[in-house]
Length: 585
Image 1 (cartoon, one colour):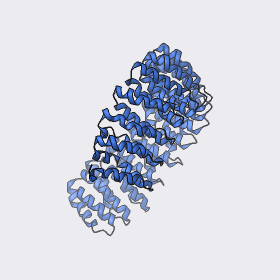
Image 2 (tube, one colour):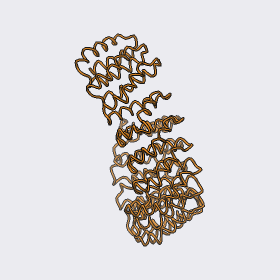
Image 3 (cartoon, rainbow, N blue to C red):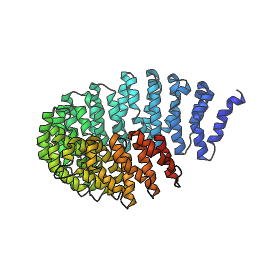
Image 4 (cartoon, rainbow, N blue to C red):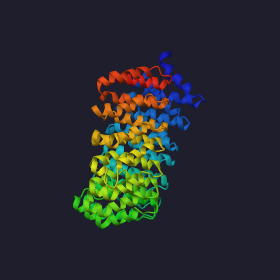
């Protein structure tokens, strides 16, 4: 063997002996390159044994080691030789540091998936059994996550052995091992048959869902999502429904939280009839839970109750079982529950229909609009367009708009911003007569935001006004918007002039022909002469957006000469943006 051939390993040996962790890390991260240089035969015969004997004691290095070994299947000669990588990973799977043994498990699952059935029985299954029998808890925790890869690849006799080994881990003395087993139960059961699920895995599920540790029981509940669909409806009712009911009443709020969080997924897995008969009463119970975290999660699932049923049945269920609790949650003492309810309340509208929404949802919408906590107001405002689609323009104009207008001056700027964002949607749905009714002018509300003391609101108001003008056209804008912009462009306060330039920039792409030339261009041409550089360069930006829609004769006669003149401005920003506008011409 030549000195050149030995070089990669000799360098690796020296680097792995270094006291500097960063040097050892860099060495580990080059393992793939070294293996490629050595070739698959030498990687199997020299590099892998060397690495097995040279495991570091630094968790950071071990973590990198596991990450690199996960890439080694093609470097050792492909799946037929992948089992040679198992030995160093077996050692990593026994390290007590969680991130290290978790990374080893990921790598082992990747390698296990590539193994043939024969190699799985010959190499992978013995590794699982060895880890499962180790004294150290970390090895047994790691073993739990490996069964699902091996189980479908092996023969019936070996499957029986694997189930027995897994069953031992489900009753292990260490809670963290049982927790890992609970988390692995679903994926393992999903690789089996319905008969095996009923005879072997349901008893394990029942044991884990009643475990004394409250960090084990939630994972057992989640396991249902993996194998629940494999059972018949009768078996679901007899084997799963009762443990779920117990979980929804569990003494630990964390277990009840998981039942609430996974409620919609459980409905899909268990089917519409069980959703109606069993899961809906569970949700009702969770909506009244004593813990705010559980109520919050349950509230978020309300719009998805019994999704598989037809609209009439869902409406009946919501009216008879859910709505009265929704009303209570909108006044819940926890702001987090009210925030959750505000985010989903109006999603009930399409199911309840117009009349019931007017009766039940509109009063709740108004109540949440007035909530003390700004995130509640923020969430409910974002659903304004949804409400309008359900109850219609007349109801929104008569009952809602005055409340919305009151919030246009909300002390919390994010609330003002949220309402501002809704204006183009309201314009589209309400039409001009609804947007500016005899009771309330939303165009005036929008223009007032241009004087807001928060820049984000002023900026959004400009974009919002442009969106409204795009719906209503230049004639409406000539009456409602352009006169106000002209007035603002002449005010002494430079912020008013600056805001005017920014609004024109937003309007530029949506205003065409005569309105662009006669209404907006004169405002811009005045602002480019302003004494404040910020106003001048923003006016140049507005011109760049406006000039594609301006009359070409006016453009050549008035705009280009002025922009050419500004190219010699003292301010660097004015020079830059005038050049940009000139290029747009």
